[in-house]
View 1: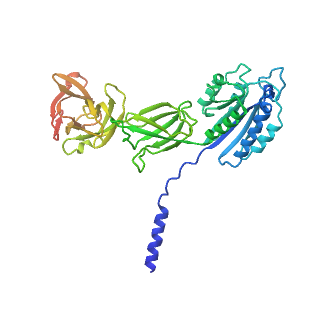
View 2: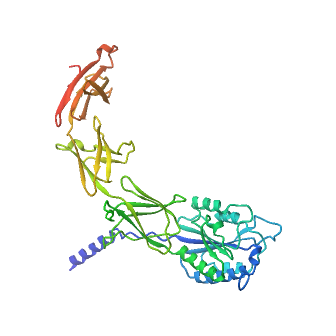
View 3: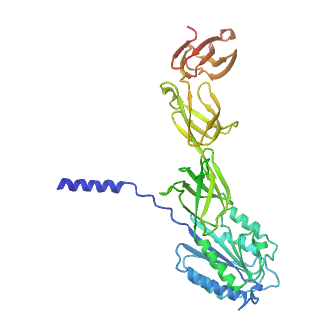
Length: 457
């Protein structure tokens, strides 16, 4: 009984020491900054009230609904509320409520205490908002601009928005235009919603918050030559197309139904996707429709290449091969002999790092097929010099000498693996001060055989 208890205890300890299942990365903190128009024009009558009164009343309802939402922080920046117009003050903007958990009531209180007074410095307000987001390693920074007018201070909101997005400070902003259609002015700034009526404003505000807080789903189909999504098990990197920031890395997987797995991603980002096949394939400027499952197909048909050496293969240990696109010097991969690599279908040029190097052009990789490249087993050349000196090894072919190796001037014996062929060594001892003491030795290398080359017997 005691032995059984010890076995059970030991088993429990072993299980406890095993690595736990990987935990999913914690979701990012969503920080929503409301940039609210408090310029003089917001005192204008809309339908049931002034634009400002109605907008802040609907905002209050929204803030109440967000009070219990986890993993969210809110902030409020106002413009046009500090200085009376005229005269025009184009620096009239201020962060009134900084980001903090559970500060909905502070935002509501601040809006109740404000009276619209000034002008509309949109670009400047947007630019200043960059300072409103404290540093954060795992945050989504979202701007919601609510306005009843366009830029009045000569700034360029579109350029400012692009700059903030490119620098990774904010995601693509949302804009709700009150009372008029400002699509042509704000479409370049971000995602624009037109609220020409009070009902439209309420609806737009709810849609924006839904899109800002909810991720959406997509799948990437890696297509074979028949157009079927059969390729898998390769990493995919999702970049923010504007800032260049890495957003996600997923190793492509098939689910239990044999279909590409569903990914959950942020719909507010435009993506550049790199599928890390050899060579990589790319999807540029992919926009996701919030709330809609997106399916993206990319041609990624692949086959295999196996590298082998004839004979025992012992000499292939550590032997490398450079894989190039056909007709180009770009190096796609360095593959070792004895390995099988996976490549996009097509033709490749190989450079095998033997002595001398072997160039194998136009190697064709076919869909789901293994192309085997086999090279001859090398021979061994044992070069004995007996003197330290200067020398080189050449391949001799049709009366043409091609340099392939510089002998070590401080070694009297070297062992080289060489491809079969005709060779020649040219050598002069260090102590000899005349060129007439140059000696040469021709020899032949055969696969699997050792050839001794003796200089100055």
